[in-house]
Image (cartoon, rainbow, N blue to C red):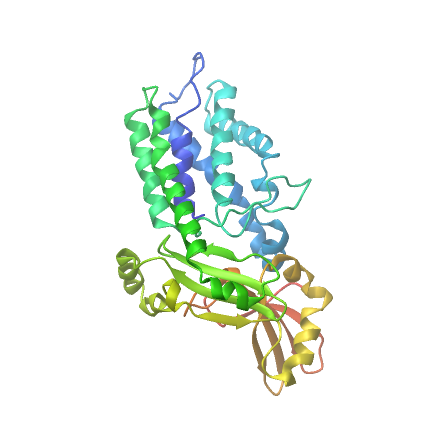
Length: 355
């Protein structure tokens, strides 16, 4: 989830821990200080982004949303963060109160990230299993507005026993999204269920701009079928996409009766590419991507007189008429061995990785 949403939720949950008996302190732990500490704690788990600059492929495959997002390690991170606040910012409140505020802020981050498609390793380092409920896109303006409403209301009710009810807004929104998702499942044509001969259940992934839009994915023996479904027209989403210059994006989502299925796989259409594609996909250096990608597909083949490149992506990060955000591959220059590369976000610029 985006940093703004995390900070809003963190600032809100920071108002919940009960105030213990006060001791002498130089800074009053009022709602403003609580909000600040909660917001800082809520973005703390994303400190793992520093590892992206070391190795982007290893980052997305193994390191992101792992130990820093673990429920098991959350108390440790909260203790460290509370000690840092006392050491460098001079807060001398009861340590247990600072610890509690840091803990609920960190836990809010972990739980919210679990609502997206990327997944979060709740039990790291004991397990690398990723919890993902596929309810929210990584940037959901509606959910962010609900989080902002919660923060405003909880500040207004900060001295009331009813302040916990401030969280009714995001909870109701999540319930609404869950109902939309269930309705999307029910609207999928029954004929497609039979014709696809799916070897695994269909998956519905949230999409940008609207909770009414879903990406339907199903794996088959021949590859992967996917389609872009909308439950209804979303005027707000249409206006936002037009404002961002991606209005053509909206035309790719269809109501259930007009749903259009697309087929993709790890095999290129041109058999002449097959040898290089197979070589890269099975290459030892490409192990991290094979581990990471839940719905891997062949993306692109590039060949010049001096260089050959094979690219793959993951359908979780495909949106209509927009470049996939995550694309990794390998390139071989004439007379050299295959090397790892990635394509920059929403660009075709190649970046060589540590091999």
